Length: 212
Image (spheres, rainbow, N blue to C red):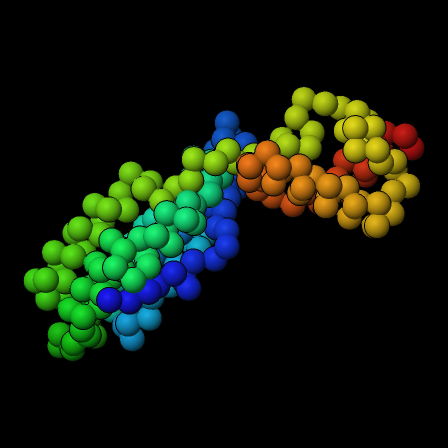
């Protein structure tokens, strides 16, 4: 059995554009469990914009991909602890991945090099798909958009007052506020998608324009 926990990053946040779920989705990220034709296992984030084709190596199953979660209906975080538990030596995902890797081969079918799975590997693949279905590895942690977190229903002027910033704020002033916000986000045990610094700079710019 194999320990695959090294493929999991410290955090994995999937985002959507636009972040506002009342608006039509233009693009969204998805997390994929990937087993390539060399047997290398990874978790990758892929952005979908609609009408996306399937890469040839995946279409011909030389590379195997399994959908873990996506942000089509709103930003979400993956449950890192749950993933690491099941990817550890002897974990449920680890056992199934080992079986799939052992039974996966690439052969020439007369037209293309294609991936094949033994019966045992096919059974393991079905079990893996069942296991990761229904967002099994999606965290229940609350995910906020950076704009919603910093601005909400407040005016830009109120936001700057709340953050104790002015239109003459320096880079250091903004960085200090961002650090403070990250601390508060961590304290509340939530996740914020998007760039806090960019949101602050956009607020400052809008207030400058209003005051001009």
